Length: 185
Image 1 (cartoon, rainbow, N blue to C red):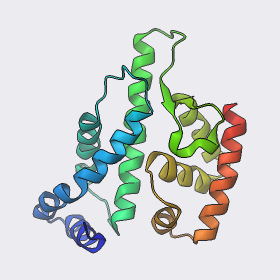
Image 2: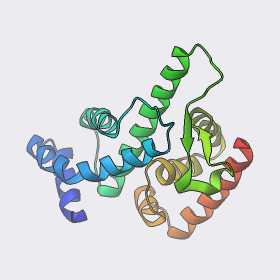
Image 3: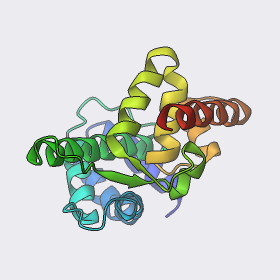
Image 4: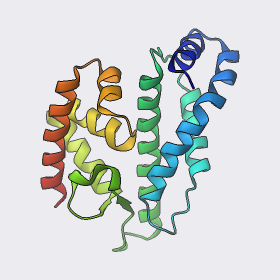
């Protein structure tokens, strides 16, 4: 899928062209499904949320972005990553509430962001809470982790979404991983 086609459709959609959304979704659906599959692959084996359901929930929230000013595909996938993170966190909270605070917590493996923790799995709520704390003193680092870890974006794509230089994103990514590793241990 050429990035310029996606970007053009995003711009048209942002201008209110509903037909552009109909053309856009088939182009981005496979990538959104891949992201959702990666997230859920890291979840516990008996997780009740399936990749299609995660994509569908994210899609409904994306379509509801009435005042979005889409700039490019990287920004779109960044927003999608943010929405998927929220959906997973909400799902984890609901699961914990159903268990009435049981000791078994929702688990999220960090195979794609191994440097965040030395253990192969991290509690999704613990990651979310750590990111919320990181956001209090460095919102840029929190956003970088969100885009890289939850969004699966590369350093270059993250830099593009945030309008930062490659070296800045790389430096902040290293610092945020070290901080999170310490926080989650």
